[in-house]
Each structure stands twice: as C-alpha cells, then as structure tokens.
Length: 386
Image (cartoon, rainbow, N blue to C red):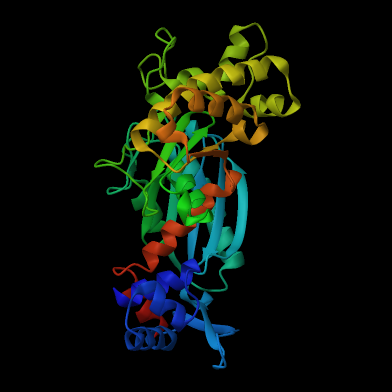
C-alpha cells in the first residue's frame, strides 16, 4: 500500500520529490525515503533532474515514473469513431490515432479493428516496454466487474459480449471496461483544479449520457454501474416519441444530436447524419440552431434537477454539438440558473469541456495507470523491474 501510494502521487504530478511525498502522503520521512529507494532500485521510478529547495539546502531529486515500467493501451469508442492511444505510466501520450467505426456493426468487427490498430500503435511507440493494462470505453451501460456491456441501446449485438476477456487474451494484461462518458468525466475532473468536484459531465452526441465524479475525485458508479445514465430520463412533451431503449419520452430521443438529425427529416429537410448536424451547427444554419436551442431547454431542465439532487461544483457539457457552438451551453445554462434554487447554483460552474474530444483518452489513461500502480498491481511491476 505504501509503495502504491508513493508511485501514484508521483505519476499524478502531485508530488515529485521525497519532501513533497512526505507532505502529500502524510507518512514519516524515513518511510517515504525507504519506499522511494525501493521503487528506484526496482526501476519503477527514476530521477529526472533536480528541483530547488527552500533555504540553502542541496537541490532535491525530481522523481518520475520510468518508461521501462510499461504502458497503458486506450480505446475510447463512440458510436461512429474511436480514439486509440498508447500512454506511459507518467501520463505521457506516446501514440494516438482516430479511426472510423460503427458500433452497429457488432463487437467482432469493431474489436478486430481496435485490436489491429492498437497493436500497430504499440509496436511503433512502446519502445519494447510491455502493456500493463488496457482501458476501453464504450457508448452504453457496462458491468465493469464482468467486463461486458449490458443491453446498450445503440450497440446491437453487444449485450453480454465478453469485451474485457477478449482483449485480455489479445494483449495479455488486465482490461478495464468502462462507459465512455464516465471516462470523459474522470479525465475532465483530473484536468481541473481540485475545487471543481463534485462534477457532473453531460455528453450530447448520438445519444445523451452522464458521468459523476465525487468530492474525492473518484468515479461514482452506483451499486450496479448505472449511475449517471441520464439519457433515459423522461421529459415533458415527449410522450409519443419512442426511444431506442423501448420507452417513450426519453431525453436522448428528444434532444440528442441523433434526435436533431431525425427532426430535420421530419420537418422536410434532408435527414442528416450526426457529423452533418455538427457541421451545420458550426456554420450557423438557422434551422439546426433553432433545434439545438429547443434541445438545450429540455436538457437544461434535466440538468437543473440533477443540480438539486447532486449539488455539483461543476457541470461540464461535452460531445459533438457542444464542441461545434456555444448555443447548446448557453441554452442549458439559462434554464439551469432560472430553474434551480440559488443555494444550488451560487457557486456552480457550468461550462464546456476543457479537454474536448480527448477527455475520454485522458480519463482512460488515469484509470489504467491507477490500476497498474494500485496496491494489487504494483507487485507485478516491481517484479518486472527487479
């Protein structure tokens, strides 16, 4: 546990010297010194220079994770595209590629493409260091304990598919399966100051999803992993609109980018793809902007309810529509501040994502590194270093 704590503090950048670690970990100086020495001897940490110390003492060694320790493979899947990356244990991005996919083609076709691209990235960027973990995010509910999607509405054929087990066989290391918006929420929270949690992340794309970060900076999954699945909250005025989940009136069926694309067709315009909706928003198309503002009102009502329930310090809006224009954010913000009570909003920050489409990669990297450096995982790393 001590070695895990020290390694994770160094990896996060929260502490980069023995003196920093004493303060950050709350451990005795001798305990920190012996732990750091062991991590250095085992090749888990390395010295990357010095940093000045107060007074006239000699400069302190600056510590970092050794690139020889291995890397984390990341796959952040959306409905129509995937970000794939190799990240070392010091959170340095070693390689990245974006590929087109269609989750409706099913898990075998999609995962075959993901595996092929990750192998290519690994060969190019790993420097011979092994993969220590794979983290994959998918746009639907998941059972993280068993590594399988659970009836994901926009992913036909993926229910109960052994995603984690398949990737474990392919890459020979632990695999973490997570919801894509949870990864975005975690990445966003770790990129912000510590006072910006609790955090609610709302992604508006092909569907609508949410991710919750606690005041401790950790993901809140709920007892079965369903926390934050806000896309299927029922909203006013949608009683006859059927959602892909089988219910009617869901916010996803009424206000997602996919819903806006369908409404274009219903109003006589050519039905657009989600990518085309984003392009139309970016160009300021008046019809699409009207639909975005209507969607923002509905999303704002849901967010106002969640603000009362969860009382977050920050609500982050992400996804393709939010990235294309500030109209969605402005509409949501207007409704939230109008509908929510002052106590819940007086310190609330409601803003677009600071990491944009790379928030999921950042969150997956954090999750994977913390798994490798956990009390249960660092033993393998120490043995390899020795």
